[in-house]
Length: 175
Figure 1 (tube, rainbow, N blue to C red):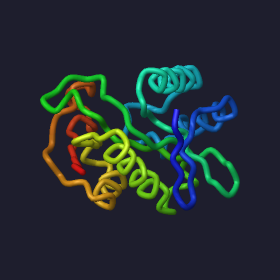
Figure 2 (cartoon, rainbow, N blue to C red):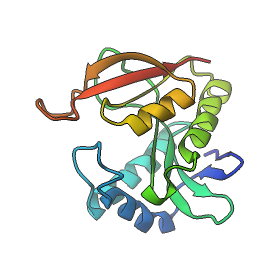
Figure 3 (tube, rainbow, N blue to C red):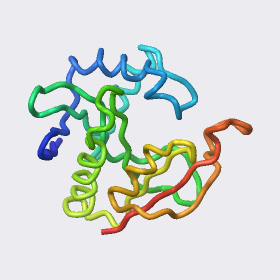
């Protein structure tokens, strides 16, 4: 598995010491505001297992993100393949989730830009998408900062009808 470095961050394989800060991050209501619910420890460790397994099957994934200066785990940024079916799948998605105390420093766009570069220049992908609920203005701003363009709104098939999170935006970028 490859790692990616930016001026301030290292995107790398997951390690056992990442587990507890990942659990704490996924329990944080602020971090999980635009997901159906916060995650318990069991859900987070299962997610971590799926992320690690994905890397064993693909040349990319959701890399653990750490600060180069301190080696502190701050969340994840990377590429994945959405598991739901809709008119734009199958596709490769770029996504990020950072611990709240690391918001506002430009880490998400810095790491996402490096992931886009990896996707286009190393993996030779023709398109990378990103999506979130229409309510998640912070993530939409990251999408714009990294040069993605708005494609459309869509109803996420895995979100229950009537949920405030149902309507999503789809953004895309090509090399």
